[in-house]
Amino acid sequence: MPPKDKEILKEKEVLQAVVVDDLLSTDFPFSGPKGLLRLANVRLLDYTLSCLSAAGVEQTLVYAAQGSEQLQEHVRASGWGEPGAMAVQVVACQGSLTFGDLMRELDARNAIQGDFFLLTADTVCTADLRPLLLRHRATCARDKNAVVTLAFAQAEPQHAARTEPKQLLLGTAASGRVLAHQRLDPDARNLDLPLDLILQGPGVELRYDLSDPCLAVCSLAVPPIFSDNFDFQTRDDFVRGLLLNEDILGHTMYAHILQDEYASRAHSLPSYLATSVDVIRRWTFPLTPDVSLSQVDRGYRLDVVFNICKQSDVSIGRSDVEDCVIGEGSVIGDNCRLRLCVIGKNCVIHDDVDLCGAVLWDQCVVKKGFKKSHFLAPERTVLSKNNDKSISVKVEERMDSVDSDTDSSEDEGEAADEVDEYENFFNEVQDSLERGFGEKVNTDDLVVEINSSRFANDIPANEVSLWVSKVVLGLPAALKKPPKDVLAYFRPILRKYVGKASADHLNCLLALEEVTAEGPAEAAKMLTLLYQMDVLEEDTIVEWFEESAGQQLRQQANMRKFIEWLQTAEEESD
Image (cartoon, rainbow, N blue to C red; front, side):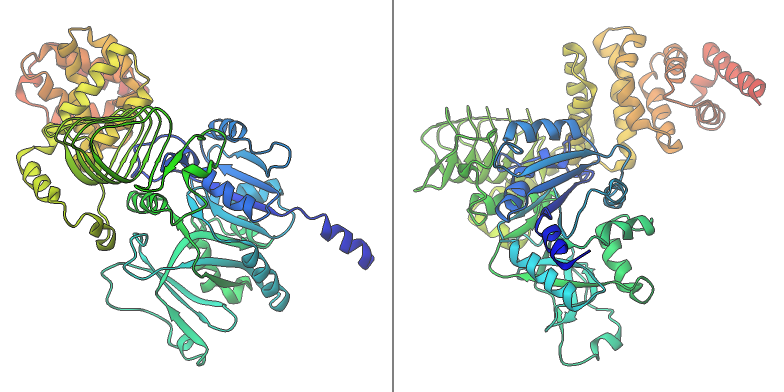
């Protein structure tokens, strides 16, 4: 191709970005795609797209592992793709489980034309990305093996946003080439670095003052690297693999440090709360709610005196409220004290409430006298002194200093000693499921409520199946409904929490034995239903009956008949 034609082709190259919306962290009581999670009452995806649009990106591809239709609807409603706006396309990748799966899907679709920005749907960044792109292209012109330039934000080791394992970066100061990269446990005292890398010369530097916003500029060679290496499941696998196999793969990577620019990632509860506080404090300007990042969440006004960003129809009584974001229709009573809080839409906060560093999603209710700091309350949560369903979040010391004059932590400790977490969890799940059955609530929404209660009460994962089974199997008696009707309605919940693990099956059988202790004749009837609904498997049932079941159940005639039938059916199948 003549040089002139090459120049014309290069001019027509569209600047692209890829946003990876992989599976949401299990920390969050939220079942939708990560990009639709609200941060300071604005969808995370809107922060990401606003940053890319400001950098001159013309086309953004959002690769989603779940909820692609919801994402596409939000993109359409938000005005992305309209004339003059950045084009945004949501790509559904059903069956993808990891970051690596989505990158392999990107390679298979062959949708990238040249260098592209790569970031996750939970990245919040105000940096001008154009210097990062120019730095990457200059590096590639100098080093033909360079394939990626990673962006890091400068942050002191004790910065509140640094809630994840600390970044340790070893590289050459002049060129920015990365020689080693580690994530260190906060309590780590020793470093394990190859001596030959350190001794390469005086130009090698060790950086520990960095945070990783999961932002990079990639060359066309990056997606095929994931396709060629199926053990690359995470971004860290990719970075580690390139460094360890540089001689084999022949690729190099570089780092770009963002100076005096904001870049963070809200992918865990601590980092989510820390980033929310940053938005409230307006460290992310112009990415703040009052700037109207999308057409969906317009209407926020800023009270400069008290730094309150609020929508219409917000009512605040005679209370001390500062540094907050408040959604429309929310009501705050008298004698309340709110600091660094995000209040969703249509929330009701009664009198004498003291909150700091709290995030309340839509339609939450906080009863009179409730006091707490640093927590997340899912949608429609009711909080009171005796019934706290919020999810507490451990924060770094620097973030905790915002409420050093608050004595609520001492009160929380005393209350925790008085409440039995398991009993609390059982009661909360029972209330949710009884209401769900009466109002015919979607079981997916009930699962979100159960997970929220589980995290709030710190219930171990291996014990959730036992307590959920106790609740569900006890509901026919509590609701005075036929077991067949109740168990059929809650079958999706039982199948989710009992699953395929034998330990969970045994937990369900233990729950059955406990629930039917006063009426063992009901045990065979309910066990038959659980078997017919594919909740329990015959091998586990027979093993439990022969080795663990109590004498009362073993002597029950209907139970023995059912077990004999199972054994006969199994033999005939063999």
